[in-house]
Image (tube, rainbow, N blue to C red; front, side):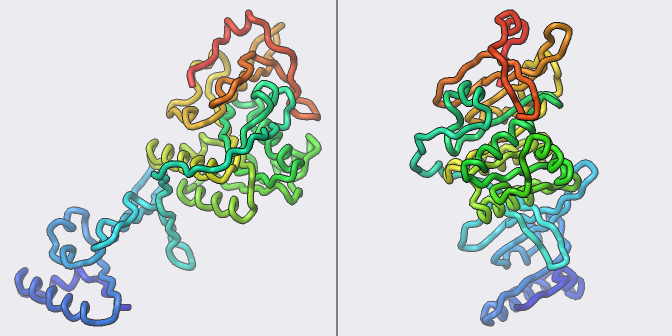
Amino acid sequence: MIAIDSFKALSTYATSAKAFLHFLHELAGILTALPATTFWVGEYGRDEIATAPEFAVADAIISLATRREAERAIRHLEVLKLRGSGFRSGEHAYRIAHDGLHVFPRLAESTPVEKYESQATRMSSGIPAVDKMLADGYRPGASTMVAGPSGSGKTLMGLHFIFSGAAAGQTGIIATLQENSTQLDRIVAGFGWSLASESVELMHRSPVDLYLDEWFYELLEVIERAGAGRIFIDSLGDLRRAAVDELRFREYLYSLLHRCANQQISVMMSQEIPALFGISSLSEDGISHLSDNVILLQFVPRDAQLRRAVTVLKTRASRHDPNVREFKINSDGIVLDEPHSSSTRRNNPPPRT
C-alpha cells in the first residue's frame, strides 16, 4: 500500500504543465509495475476532475464531500470511476468514528421481487375486530401504514401488532424514533405487556443528527440477528425529515419493503397527519402507494365529544370492511365499537391515499 498525501501539492514543484505531465506518466508506469495499490489523496474541486491530468491516469476516482442540510452537515462518498468494473452509483453516506470511516452504501433494490412461497395463513393484528375488517388479518410479508393525527392511537396499534406476534412465537422489532426505552416501557406495562420479552427487540434512535442510510442498515442488522417476523416503524415522518431529499427517502423505503416482502417479514409503519378533522390526504409524498394495507385513525365529533375511529382504506389484492368504526382505549388496548352511522361517513369522506 502506498498513499501520497497530498498528490495535488506535487504539481506546484513542476516547472511547467508539460513537465508535470511527463512526471505523472513516468510515476504511473513505475507504480503499475509494482505489486502495490496506490492512493493519491488531494483537495480537488469537482470541476478539476475533467481537467486535471491525474484523473485520466487514475484507475478509480472516489469523491468525498460534506453537504449542509438545514442545521446538519452530512458526509457523502461517491465512486465516479472504476476502470474495467461496475460500481454502485450515487451518494453513499459515511461517518468518521474513533475506528475510522463507517460507510453506508445507498440502499437500492432495482431487481424484480424474487418469486417466493406466499403463506396462505393470515396474521392477527392483535385486535380481533380489526382482523375482521382486514378479512381475517394481515398477509405475511405485507406492509401496513397506520395514519392519523397525534393521540389517535397509532403507536398502540403498532404495539398490538408486535405483541400479538410475540404471543404467537414471532420475534418483533419496535423501531422507534418517538418514545425512548423508559417511556415505552411505561406505556406497554399499562396494557400488560413487557419489553423484557425475548420475542421483542427495541431499536430506539434519536431523530437528532440521524443519518437515514445508517438507520436503515442498523435495522437490517437487527432483523438478521433477531430473525424477526414483524417490524413496527414509529414513525415515517421522523425518517422523512432525516432524508436528504424526497427521492432518496422513497428509494430507501421501497428497498426495505422489497427485502421484507421477499423474506415474508411483515411491516407496520405509523404516519402522522397534521389535520385533526376533515382529512383529505394521508401524505404529501405518496408513501401510502407503497403500502399493501392503509388504515386511517381519526377523531370524529359525536354527542359533544371527540371519539376515536378507525377505517380500513386499502388492502392490496384482498377484500376489506370499509366501515368507520369507533373505538376506545382501555387497559386491554384498542377496543372497537359497532360500525359508525352513515351520517358520520357522509360528513367525513375517506381521504385520498
